[in-house]
Image 1 (cartoon, rainbow, N blue to C red):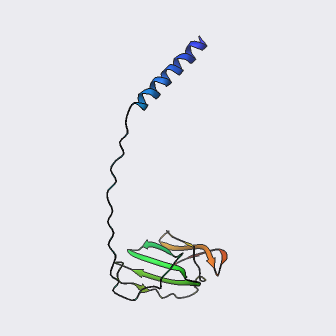
Image 2: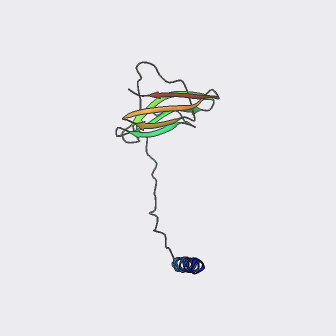
Image 3: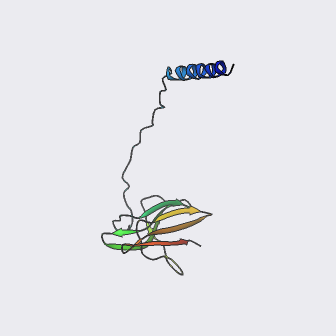
Length: 128
């Protein structure tokens, strides 16, 4: 009885497997992307590497990064990607850094870890 039950389970599993293998799954077409370079209409941040960028409160934000060997802690934002403005900071500001993460959480910008002059950081900063 036990052997016949096991044989039936194996036979049923084999049938399901064979039925599934016979179907061709056609992936959904991927829509094409087209990019257009924005014409910058204002002063803009220095050429950067290892910076962070996020969308927050209807604006694009570029935070920190490096220009060559110069680490930065600047914050820039733009409502349209063409006109950029440096953001004035009141109170304490996070140290210069690159290769950090910036996230939006609880309606704040969060800056987490990174490198400062090639030294690894483990600090966490949030906007007011």
